[in-house]
Amino acid sequence: MSPPVVPGGWGAGSWGGSGWGGATFTPGGAFAAVGAFAPAENVIRLLFTQVPYYSEIFDEYDASDAAHYGVTPVAGSSGWDGNPARPVSPVQVLVSTAQANALDVYLDRPMSPYPSRYVISYEGLASANLGVLLPPGQFTVVGLYRRLQPQSEDVVLPTTDLANPQTVSAIQGSGVGAALGPAAALGVFNVDDSGDYAFDAGVQTVKKRILRRGVTDKGAFAHLPATYGVGLLSACKTLGVPAKRNAYAADYASQIMQEPEVVSATVTAIQDPVTPSLVHFVITAKTRTGSTVAMDHPVDTIAGVSLANLGA
Image 1 (cartoon, helix red, strand yellow):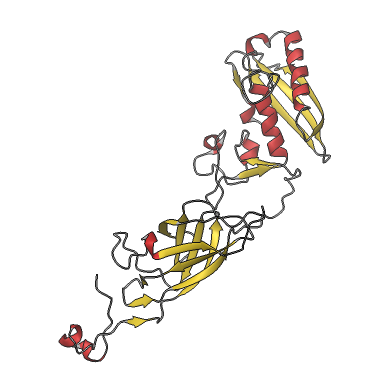
Image 2 (tube, one colour):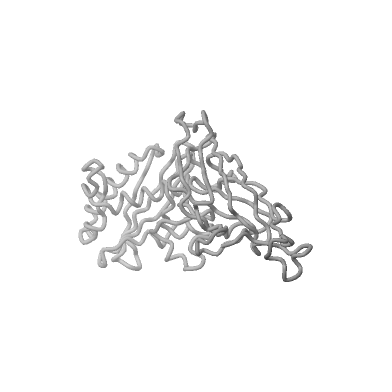
């Protein structure tokens, strides 16, 4: 593809493509690159006054071609882990859906974390109408942009885990599952508004691990002790016997006490007076921060299912 031209002087007439040179290529102009930052560990976002020419057919000035970009670590920079900034390479370029007039340059691996620094260079880019060629340039970016999260009164514990909500209360007010319905968000890994895996923290992580212990059979996880798990689902047919219910409730309390945040726990097994096939394991636990975890873990002894995801 020949260089883009803009009319001027003799170029307004039929002589524009001849040796008279009336049609000239104009660098700079209103089209310019204005900055760059990293919105994720493996993405660098380039900001422009307008989105460059983007054809996706890999012609000469196609901004989707990763060959137009280079990313190199700043010599001597390192991440918080003390390791030198690792080398990365551009592999894909997309028009950003999160920010107007921006391109997201995806890398083949995550950059080293803050405060490592990288230089992203670009060349061979043109304006959307191919009227202006952007001179080669570069920007320096910090290895990882971290968004500060506002404090929440619900987050009372320092522990975090991948967001995998097990109860309706864990997703209420969070926006998760709003489009598909709450049931569709239960028991699956969710993403945050940056597109990365979401995390939960505090009481919700304790509730999730308590429920996990209750439904897991002993020895089910090869990487955990053989005593891990209560096995309520496997034992559901025997929970109609009071002595069995109380034995499982005692084991459940002992299991909950093994969670690092928990300092005391009680579990009481109660047969539902209206629906006798339901056995409620009523759980109360105290954490090291002084907060209380109160929850009801009902088990259907006929269907052999846990109904904890319907409660708090």
